[in-house]
Length: 240
Image (cartoon, rainbow, N blue to C red; front, side, top):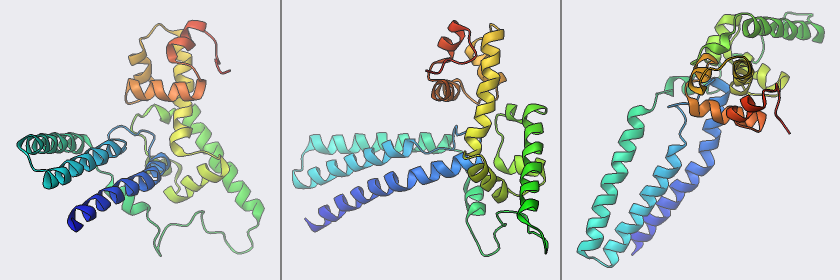
């Protein structure tokens, strides 16, 4: 009986742990990547719940053994592992980026080191220069059209470090790297929707999105309407 209770307690702990830590991981993703396909772990919630159900079936089978419950347990376990293998097979590894982003004693500074005598005005000048360089990259070079753009890639283009750039987005722009990049992508798609007759798949691809589903979701969040509705009214803004 104690083993069964411990097993159920462990299963519940796993569910709580996933529910608590998964949002932190996804917040980290939004600070590092302009896309989330095959790197987010939304599926882990469902898999954790599935294995908790399988654990409950095992406990019931131990208390009330029967051929039927045995069969249900074996089949559900098989399905569970098939689901896990499917998602793991399509999941991209970002372990190196996670480790690199962890704070250490030798971590990159939040801003370039200031020379002796530099004032707050100098800091403002650096921020202004970074803003101008960023504006050029996004309005002229249109780097947001790169579907797999990462924060580290943008930092290299700007000649700065990833930590400082992430801090710039969070504190100076009050946004994440993911939201900043996708804001430009959505604006680009709005123009395509109102000036061309491209299908939504083509619009999504030409705007830098990795998938149509991601495009639909991001567009709806920003404009409070679907791409089809936006196109049908043929306006530059369909927010309420």
